[in-house]
Length: 221
Image (cartoon, rainbow, N blue to C red; front, side, top):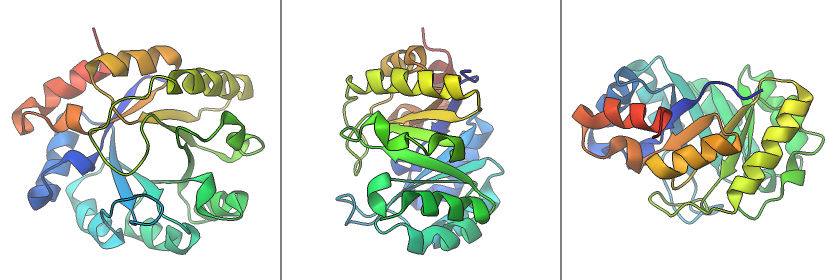
């Protein structure tokens, strides 16, 4: 069953010179999750932040830290991000040889486990794993950079995953990340997404605009 929509601002679009203030500001403006993109320059062509930054941000927000690991191999970093304050840890099936083991380790660490599907990764990648998941993330851009255009073909993937999650009858977040703006937010929600990752659309306009940006993402016209 599709849950109420939640907004997860991606700090990739925040002002990195004042990151703690930015995280606090979007939380106060109504964000549900704080989406933290971790990139290693290997699995994806960019480098962002590590566990020490997550640890430094943790005192600035009581919101759910939704940590998306775009790193390979991912297993070596699970303990570090769990200890740093992640609440959800999401990995890619391509980022390690034994994805089921990886998901079980996230659970063992007391965190919620997510699986991310790149645009070219088929829905079948969740086969036999869905009962172990708390979140499925559909990447609607190729991972690595913010500000990319939404790939419309991923709407069919969202619909297919919505049907599988509903058939299972378990509350699993269906998250979409990439190119989310006030138009594509509505498309993603109608397809079945219930968590929207939005970087540029949230952080545009500065702190005074965050509450209205989040409101418009949550209830698109």
